[in-house]
Image (cartoon, rainbow, N blue to C red):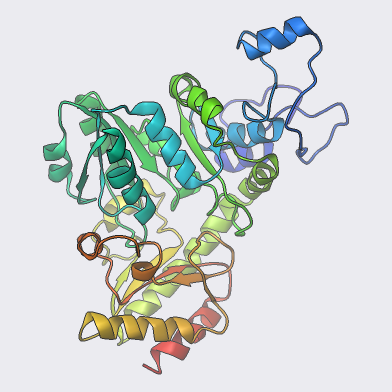
Length: 403
């Protein structure tokens, strides 16, 4: 936004307020929303150079937009990467990454605990085009190492995972990938750059679903890839221009403004999530609580090291039950008893959202895949918002205390 360069060494929460395209001649303080699919060129010669990539400048909405560029610049600054590329959704960001980096005969290695649609996209859809893949336990470093092949080009991890909040060692996976001549991509959706910056731990690509915390109020869909200039502009941008998985200017503007409050939202929601997780651990009908901020979490120490000593804003828990049928019935009862919190499959909203992963986000997986990922029928995921913790507890008790 400023007419002069920002000084070096600014903190991410300052960058979230100040990094953007230069102001227009009108001197607006809030970033402008540019709703235009095309751009008038000053001359045919300049137009030719711009379309040929010789000169900078906007030509067509599929190739770039000032509002979208502001969002990309701001997110890249917060993640500490050279560049970023915005996409129409989180899944389109994953697809763009795979299309840009892989070809028939290549091998991708990824976590079995990833988002259900990601597992389907890699394991089923890209398999039709000759891309090989292997799936491994998220936290088993030896399994990752053993599954690497000579044709492995990409390792892809999500940390923490959805919905069990499993945490992987980013630096260790980066070392494995680089020793094999491969790249490491990290889905940083749950932690966001406020809590975790994977590039500082050796990752090559950071992927985001901007639909979640980057927006923060469940308004629009968005995605992004953050990486080096060589990967973003050399590999991904050409594919983007030809495929059209672009983020709309309006959605980019909404998420751009969402980044301005990301730091305070993440810290406030994480504090509430930690309090709720401690409370859930004490309830007699809760079998287990999954939250990186709890000492009972298997990767608690690693999570605290990687995530700035904050556990994030997502808590999941298993309800005690004698069998899967009873577990599903009891989970549904708790969800149907809600009167304040929302039954909704999204996350990252300032409103607390609950969902049943086995029948929603992971509902299209085969049962053996769900079991391998630890997604039981009694599992409930809570994406904690900004309501009072006591009101969250009371709403959950409407169901838990009437089982």
